[in-house]
Amino acid sequence: MSEIESSPDGAKGAVNRRRILWAAGLGAGLAGVGAGRVRAAEPDPNIVPVPEWSKTLGAGVNANPYGKPSPFEKDVVRREVTWLTASSESSVSFTPLYALDGPITPNGLCFVRHHGGEAVIPPDKYRLMIHGMVDKPLVFTLEDVKRMPGRVNRAYFLECAANSGMEWRGAQLNGCQFTHGMIHNVYYTGVPLRSFLEAAGVKPKGKWVLAEGADAAGMTRSIPLEKAMDDCLVAFGMNGEALRPEQGYPVRLVVPGWEGNMWVKWLRRIKVGDEPWGQREETSKYTDLLANGEARRHTFVMDAKSVVTNPSPQAPLLHKGPNVLSGIAWSGRGTIKRVDVSLDGGRNWTTARIEGPATPMAMTRFYLDFDWNGQELMVQSRAMDDTGYVQPTKAALRKIRGVNSIYHNNGIQTWLVRGNGETENVEVG
Ligand SMILES: Nc1nc2c(c(=O)[nH]1)N[C@H]1C(S)=C(S)[C@@H](COP(=O)(O)O)O[C@H]1N2
Ligand SMILES: [Mo]
Image (cartoon, rainbow, N blue to C red; front, side, top):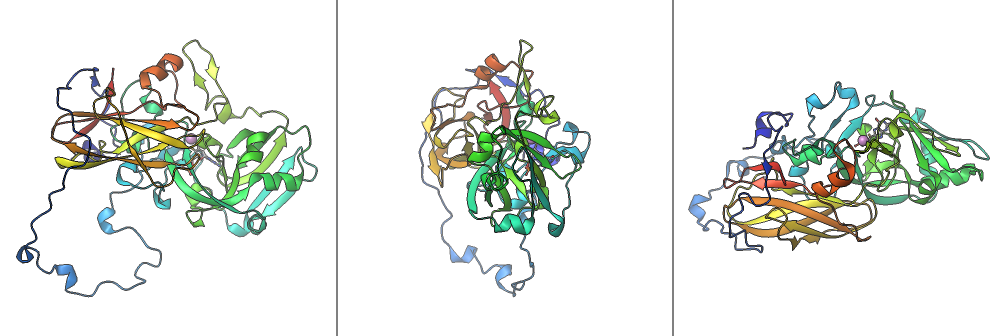
């Protein structure tokens, strides 16, 4: 199958992907969009005998007190790209987007990004401090956090600003797990941050908050008070259970639509101040150097973006005839309104079917049923949100941002599907 199977870190040999010119390889007769008929095997009871697994009793109801995926799904796991970072305590593992469906990411497969490894916090020792320019500094236990009135459940995507960051200078990593896998989308249970700030009483001079984590990195970010009072959450649950340790157990900050770095895990304190603090993660990191030498900073919002997850390099096309193309789209500015798909490198577009909830700042699933007769395809998707923003091409993005950037690459992705179904990360020029 794909080379990802043989090299678990995915990327070796994927460097310098072939740059495909606009018209290259595109003959006449592109795939007809629309469903054909799936041909199933003739029903002959003699060739479908009672299978082995029907002849003995299976395992009991509590063989796994905490359930696990089927052993046949053992390859559906987070993966690292080992050459990307020097140590795994300050690194990232990627969501296996190619093997997932629907809009929600399972807890055990949410990508993980640490700067100082995972903090282990006994829940009875947990404390959240609200201080700085407030009338009354407060300290909350975990029980206090859970007793706050106004608890909510909200699905939001979290995307690291560096997602697709390795692709700024050209197609590089061969799989949507690696090009787009620094994203997850879960249901958070938590309390609006506003409630904590109001309890402490923000002084009129307070305009920013500093959020700090209790991990060895002590990660800190400045957040405008307006955002903190708007939709940020102090979250303790994900997809109906406690936060996973790697996602910040017992409490993390949720900053809807804004870059993942601001979603401080193992949240320890919120300090109110009158200006941003200029921490490492908002100066030397998470700024983008433009071609003219100026740096874009405080680029908080994640713009609309999408990617086709099937087919993709780790999920090649296996059958001619009817196929289901699938992908995800999201926008930090609002709700995904429409996703268009091209099978010919951006010449012709068909509107995909959005399926399942499309809510503000959450991941949205789309499908396109299409027929494949074995010809080469150049698969792309283009997201639009309810502000009217349209996901740009990579060429358009480079025109404004140059190629020095790491962060905020939301350009349109292209997958080349070859005649044998194998799929590769390419760019149309
Ligand atoms: N305390 C703390 N919070 C943190 C980080 C960290 O290293 N320490 N990493 C940040 C970054 S860069 C991202 S992209 C997200 C990743 O969240 P996840 O690990 O749940 O995917 O958490 C953010 N919050
Ligand atoms: Mo990040």
